Length: 48
Image 1 (spheres, rainbow, N blue to C red):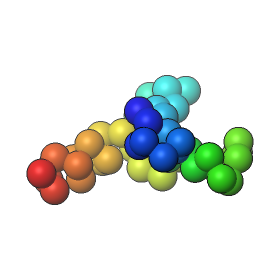
Image 2: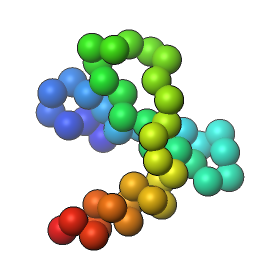
Image 3: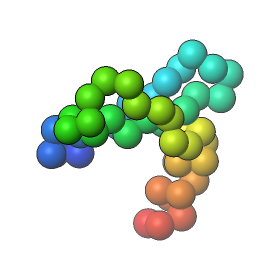
């Protein structure tokens, strides 16, 4: 998912519980997942 500023939210599906990676276009390639996808989704829904 693109945030409109060139940054991307990506899902790393290599694991049983996928990680969400916020890819900042100014930092570059090797960025680490910050939350499990389910935890991120919970936070998004909670803040609606």
